[in-house]
Length: 588
Image 1 (cartoon, rainbow, N blue to C red):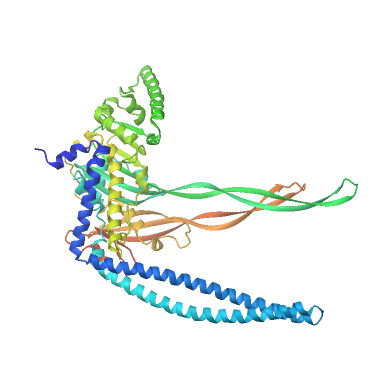
Image 2 (cartoon, rainbow, N blue to C red):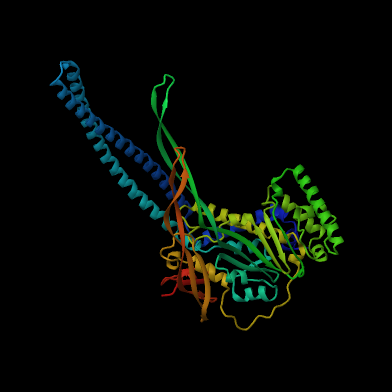
């Protein structure tokens, strides 16, 4: 009888169905189970914490009510002061008028009313002062109680919070899907494996000063390596700045009676200038190495088919099928190899029209794989539908899922901690379930192709010695994770691109040279000549921002923690920052 794990692995070839029927609930149970284990290990008193947070909520409610009363009393006090000033002014004005007019009754009446308002104002000011004094006293007591309750709640949650500084996302993912294993760190061996055996080309990124790695996580599927990466990229574009100037002039003209009159005119002149401006964008993607289809390359772009109604999808399939048929005819005429598939729907929706090896394309994309990829592309409810770019370059596969850009891949160390047990539990479960879904559907186009998960790579002989302990991707991620104020140029006012290079590597420490660069900004003024309706040229002011490149060089140390060594959290002293299995600091 097959084990449930084996059955689950067979189900993974149908990603949409298996996520909905198996993995979604399984991962929820695994996440919840882990959290309960951590709670049990922490030995916190949940009910006591709930009682404390109930008091905090009640205290917050009283504080909000007291603050509203303070605002009301301050408003009443301001009104009384304004009323007092107006009354005094009215009395003085009336007294002056009594010296020079015979309307004495009116001004005497104003003086009497003014005196009454003065008495009322003084009374209100005195009363509001007394009430504000009491309300501020209550405010102090409420703040003191709030501080005490927060301190109690923090102490009640302290043991659990200590366990939540670690991110369990990859551990939980592997528990749900053992097929996918994650590395502790993306080391140089793993990178060399992808470059030497699978042909990964990293030269563009290593030499490209316009981009940097914000996050990277490597791993393997049956020995086939992968990594997930978030990248920040700089491009220099242009920005339009606008300015305006209102002009005035007069003309003289005759009216209907023949009399001359002056007419005032005005006009607002508009001008703009276009200047260079830096732009920054972040994208996330999955890179997977597999020997299957080693001579096959293709690309497919998202068409957001899942957003279309069925009738429009049918029209799109017909349109693309005709294009592919014409491409087949053209290829045959020119001695090419491209041949449209019998499955018009898959060929049109996947639309890998630049494929260069038909036999290997068909080897990978079997009828089963075609069927499951159609489900992924058309899915409107379970996953994310047709939001992914799929590039294959021989043995390297690139998946760019747009939904992955919306996931916080690298949460801060304090992301899961809190003083309210129920909120902490919800945050923990919500994040890890969201992480699982986003990563699962990033792998989905690969899961849908059985050969990608059935094929086990042959043994690879690693070199005896590498220049560094961890990969340059991990180096950049760590550098970006340090306090940017320690690395960026002091006068940089924009994002900063961080690039690293290895200085030396010894005793489990990689010493890196870091170059961080960005732009300082200066406000500039430019005058643009515009012709007005007054028949004259005018200088219209346009303010714009000048960006000047600035850079700073630093040195950082990255230490790889050995098995059995004290955890990073305990070692994060003396300016060391904790990155799980490695720690880093800016060298003095």
